[in-house]
Length: 229
Image (cartoon, rainbow, N blue to C red; front, side, top):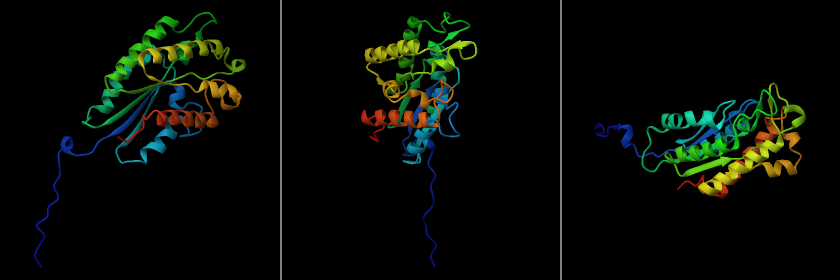
């Protein structure tokens, strides 16, 4: 029998005709999934839904407990570049930012603010600017209401719904100015008795993370952020 003349040919990575669709989720402990059941944070739920769609669909959880707008500014560009340095023409990148709760808190006393409103607003503009160097698919996620009976104080910090609301409004205003998608889950949480969605008065429980996932996924889908082309 005559041997086949076919050969397997390997191609250099840069010439391989595969495009990537990646979601980078930056933010604080709520993004990271603190207090959620194992692998049940909203980013993990998004990962399970999204990555099955293709071999080159990725969701990166880049949440860091305690993150503020200041600390996120120091790492967003470098951590994005580390995950996107093999980009090709046609790759689709989504960058989500969920930060502000730790900016809105008070530390040491109810009157000592972690980040004043003016600096928070400035930092958000800079974060969106950094994000846009990687993609035009950028979305900011609003802040959640808290259970003040449990988190005011919370150790040596104070979280209040008044401050959460004030900083949520700043996020909304900055997104309007920057023409950036703002995903605001707070209204529905307040309408539906938000206390039952919280594990410790601050972080969502399993039901809360499921609800967050549904709201965020729904908004990304509605606005065409997750479109395949």
